[in-house]
Image (cartoon, rainbow, N blue to C red):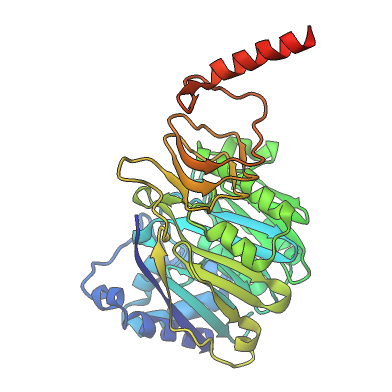
Length: 435
């Protein structure tokens, strides 16, 4: 899938009520906002305004005030605003998100359903809580972001199995941004709050402290380290029962951990995540899990590189300056879903790279069945735990490429000669030399 992609950028300051009203008024000026009045009200099953009010007043009273402003801005009853844009019993399609925390950088891809994505990056500075910038989900929620203290957080869905009454993921991310300044504070908060579903939360603060919090309705387990990768499954033995069948998550994690170990600079980390041919970039838009945006934060400097779609030229945001009163200088982020490289040729084969672009590329756990490699250099490339069944290589430079053990060469040919035959001849030749 390739299509032009636009994400609106909004800035809101004032009381929480002001922020909610400003957000609603900006929304009404968009195409979807103008269609809002024609849409029927959506009421979640067993919705209770009283229960919602109790949850917000206990954990996020500022967002309860924001919802009042949002209802006023939309000119709808508070009950409808809370039912559609708050902590209701709302179902969430699977999300496939990736994060890297290393060398003082927090990098992340957000993969989700195009139709359900808010397409709004919002910077808010409500009185009484921390200012933050992040991608909106149902306006009051966030899927990821950074706050004025440099704390970064992102969500990674693991499973909806064993759901229990509790806070939803997007509200949890927003509460963290509003209330916490460090990774340590966030971990303490995530241990206290009730989790309705199983999610990973990736974290990094301005001091470089990073963690992955594995949060299920039954337990919270924390992984800490200087070089971390995070995808959509739990690693701790105690949480394994909550993992759903998700081969994409298991394929992405080794590549993310490799990026972390390499301690890439911000521009290189952004490209590693956002390159449409990266092993962690997701093209499954038709299945509701394509890569929609990429962020790379430098928490100590309060700076963010942001791109939407794939192969994006990132926009750089100095959030520290915005907190001090300067405008962001952005009305929208534009890009292209799927990026500029076409991952499939007309015959349905995945095109990995063309015209020299594969040198040093890492393919770990990447599905390469029937892939087409054409007119490129694969010098120093690494292949591990991948299937190349049906793949075709044309005009390739394989300088210094290493093929290790546990390889199946059945049916593989080089210049019309079977690889198994070549290896058998070489083995006989070696035995003759050694005799």
